[in-house]
Every structure is written in C-alpha cells, then in structure tokens.
Image 1 (cartoon, one colour):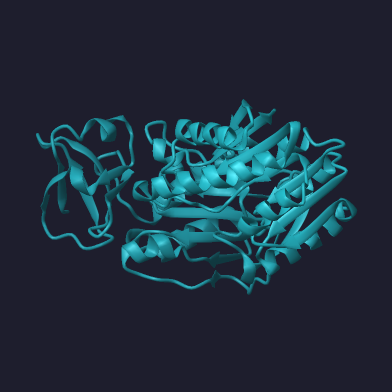
Image 2: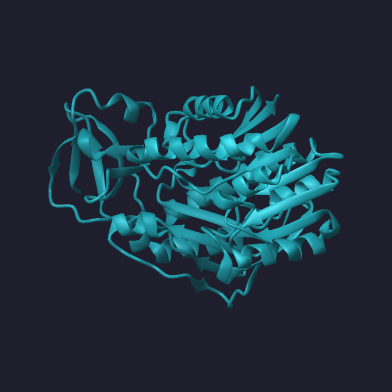
Length: 395
C-alpha cells in the first residue's frame, strides 16, 4: 500500500481527529497511488496515523476513513459504518419517528465515511458519492445501504462541485430498485412530496429542521417573509405556528409548485402566498413599497465555496442582510442563515452587525442555530460545522 508522509508541524490536527490531509501538509508520497486508492498516512517519524482515499487533484489529498491499523476498507467496513450511523439516529436522536421519516443517515466525515452522503425518505435512500474512492466502491456502498436500511430504492444524485475535482461525473439515476418519481416523507409532522426530477442536492434540506422548529414558536400573529424559500418549509412552519400572513419568495417554479402542494396538503395554504421572484431584486422593491414584516427569514444558497470566495461572500451577506433588516418592523426578528462552511460563525455574526449599522438598525443575537444533529461532525473538524442560523432581535 502506498504511504503519505506528513510534514512536521502538520500532524497535530490529524492526531486530534481531523479527517482531511491537506495537500500542502504532505512531505512525500511513497509508491504511485491512483485517485481513489487507499493510502496509509504517516508522520515524519513513520508513525501510522490513519488510512484513507487518495485524491491527487484535490486540496484534500487524503480523506481519512480508518484509524485502526490494518483495517480493510471493504464491504464489511461499509456495512459496519452504516449500521453504526443508523444506530446513532435510532437510539440517540429518535429518527425516524411518526412525525419525521426523512433524515440524514450518513453525513460523510461525521459518520466516518468521508465522501459519502445518504439521506433517507421513507423507503428511498438518496446518495451522493463525492470522491473517486467512494465512486470506485459504489457496488459495495450501495449493497450496504440496501442491506442496512431495507429501502425500496436508492437514487444517486450528482454534486458537480465535488465530482469535478475528483475527475468523474454522474447524472441523477436510480441505482437500485424500482423507479422513483417523488420523494415522500414527513418532517415535524408535515407531509411532503418532492418530485425527484426537481430535487436539489440530495433532495431536501434536513439540516434546517431544528431551526424551523424554533421559528414556528415565534410567529403567532406575525407577518412573515421567507426569502430564498425553496419549498417554503420555513413558511409552512411559520404558518402552523400561527402567522397571520406569510410571503414566500423563490425563483424556482418547480420548488414553488412543490411548496404550494405541501401547503395545501398540510392545511396552511390560506396563510401563505408563494411568488416567483429573484430575491436580489425583490428585496429593494419591497423596501420602495414600504413593506414591513414582523419576521424575515433570509436563507440564501452557498456564497463562499472556499476561503478564496470569502470576501465576495461577506459583501453579499452584508448587502442582502442590510436590505432584509430594513424590512423588519422595530422589535421584530431576522433569521439570517449561511451554509458557507468557509465562513466561521463569529465572522458571520460580525458581518450581520455591520449590515445592521448599514441599515441604521441595532440587532441582538438571541441564538445561533446549527445543522440538525443527524448532521454530526468530528469535534476536531471545524469545517464540518457549516450551517449558521442567527436569530436576531431588530430595533
């Protein structure tokens, strides 16, 4: 097996449990490993640190999978890790349950399976194979998923951003079982049917579950704006929480159609108005119209794909949040979200404070939400805690 030696001064994060070996941390590569091969990772003195998949073209040159020397990365390995992931959800998180049948089963590094994401929708699993190593072993991975979960079908969905760096591409497909037209599931008591053809990423954003539940508790009698709403799950939560009126904006016709169907299915359609809009243009238009809301939710797509995009992302977050704050009634609430892992929580909150100054507002941070606990991360892996959901009181 090929060996990757780490430069002095770069070992401590790996020793503490960080799952990535950055390319600049490598002193030498012994052997000629190909993309997707398993390599041993050693410190400068030759002490074994772990084994993982090699990605020569990636900034993350090795993704650690095993810290047990001599452990094989084979079918039994995947089955064991999947069973552990399922046990965590069932025994500690209570998932699935009567009210929530859609959840994340495998969150890559958080479940010791870097390069693999698995979401479950009732009896369908949605899978992303993000590295060449995982893709080369898809037969073993899919077989383990089918055996452990007993799902009816497994669908594979692309992540072009990741797979391009790994040197392969995929298209959405049914990888196991009968064809899938809709992803049907429940979350927090809401019933959803999401057309598979219009699904984003692995289909749905389970990571915001707890933040939606918090928002629901804060909306009774309020007028609410849900910007970048996708299927309108925040809007549905606000409506069920007693909001008197909700405006949900997104530019995806398919997502809005799914949101309208969900609102009707769950008995909150009369409270929610779904509108197709480019939020970047809609926010200033609402300001000009002197529209005001008691609660504004701003949940844009990822703005910083990596650290080199951070400055541009800060400017966008500052600009959009300054506009959103102008739409909040004095004493109201802004829920501002960022799914950019490159932006650390303190940086995001500081950007929101600057946006408030731009808007002539003062804000107090009530709470800072994260991704739901079925999206775990290694304690040494700051990069894995990507989601920030700032609940801000606005005056």
